[in-house]
Image (cartoon, rainbow, N blue to C red; front, side):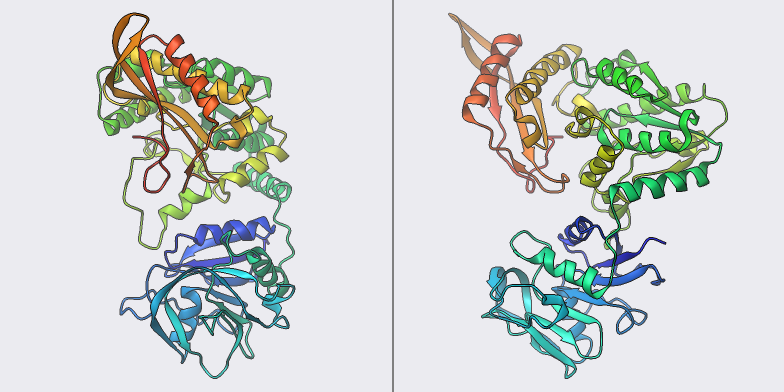
Length: 509
């Protein structure tokens, strides 16, 4: 039985970061909404209460039932979680005069407390709260204070229960990982056995038991998630897995042939389907990005269904779903507002009467790459940038035409190839070119031109939830701009996107 830590989510933007930090310590953890979590069994070694944008003083404040947890198994409240354990158990939380946000130092620290063993006096922490604890219950003892916050950390006497006002999961809390490690390994006694190799061994064994001799089909996209999922399944069931790689005509220049050859060379049972004309005929002249997505999704289902029907007696459809997708579907406030429709095609399993198998549903993106490395996949697959499901269709803004698509492919190829040749590709999380639906005046030779403008987009991130624009060298950007304008007919202006997410998104559509 895999030991685990449960994180009860109150809607904090940092909740996933807590999970990532704990998993980096090689301890497995799962996130659940505070109002929808399982009754802890023997596998649960501890529970963490997350922060929240809410106030514990609100009438409708998130209020979990901790009757089967508090005083029974180790419990750590972070920020809102710490305030909840005070406000609802005999203490008091009040609105502070000023919002306590930013760096602070623990000027008092009890190093005899197991949560703070090995933590330096005066260590820097990150505060992010508008309320503050003004009175603790009698059984609570203060174990850490900042200049402005007396109850910066506390322990409940006679219980394995702690509360901290600061966020240990963020970078600015310099010894935050050590604090979390003290909790999950020192207090909860977790054995730190959650590793890529252990995940592979456990998952392959479970897949063998679950699938037996059943046949499985999987749609390959060329991306990391579907590729790693396919190799886990291949390791478990071999030739009973059939992978289908569809060319929708919206991949990068020459990518379909390159990726298909690499899959076959790595031993996968893969079928390539060139359906580019079918997709592009349907997309010709379409401008609206959501309409583009719906067309691509519909045609993909038609093509995939036709190809999959050639494989007899299939019972399962494998998908490369990863943990952030799972968390999103059961979030505290329900599914998030739709920013853009997801490229995964939800109707396929029902249409084909198949059961769904998701080998990666417990992993974050960086963990997927680590598992892929343990499986022996080459770097050119593992380090490939994320690429949108609808492909270049949503990087070609405005009316879709084959001519514009070829123009975009050429410009994109110059940018990506340039990143690789100049040793910049691995330092960028995602990059691409966006073709704008505007034209600008230019001069080439003695002639005035009125041609298209493109945007170079490159971001740094860990999981795509937040992203900063990549600070690429000016000399490199100048070189790429010149090469695109000189080599791609129809483009006479290149600009560089320096907006971050939030408030912008990584893609433009």
